[in-house]
Length: 262
Image (spheres, rainbow, N blue to C red):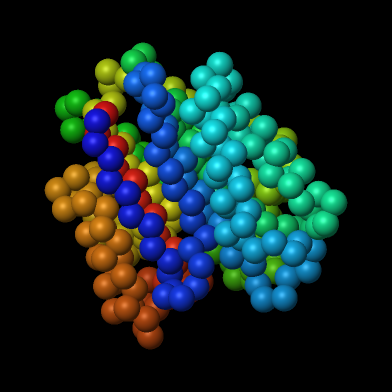
């Protein structure tokens, strides 16, 4: 088994709000990938005294421990427990009902000798490569399916669309959000390798259209995750003024990519 991981903040000197981890249990039976993309709030957000990196570190740590140590739990049960544990850590000091309470997208992948299980909540991307080279994307595309006009105002997104029916869902304070995650399982023999991406790294395909998911996977497999993020940064800088590629709310975004050869 071989792993390759890179995670880079969108702006130098600013905390990275992504979280990534690879777990390889001591028993040698399988492993897991945990990937979070923290939701950046506007300045002077009321409700919670903790920054997004605090939240992603807490939630990511809980997900790592539960995914590695409790193979008897489903991935949805693991996410629900991790959200509850994280909420309890600041329940007495913060207003967790506020729509801007810290939150994140979530991806969990867990494999054993028999199967590869996955959970995707919001707009991170999981790519699974079969032994014959076929790449299958696993996506929660609710955000992408919203009308472009609906995303024009960040305030409207939070007030009317985030974590509500007809909108899209992220992990915040309510463990019931697990009901909306995209989940599934495929035979281990059908997966040779995988790539997990936050949307900052997935821009190469989703925003800049440099190639499809197979082309992105080929780039990572040949040149590494660092090369993918470097290419994204070059494209962002080239389009900094013109913004030819619509749908980018900020020039740079935190970018994380994980490649695992099973």
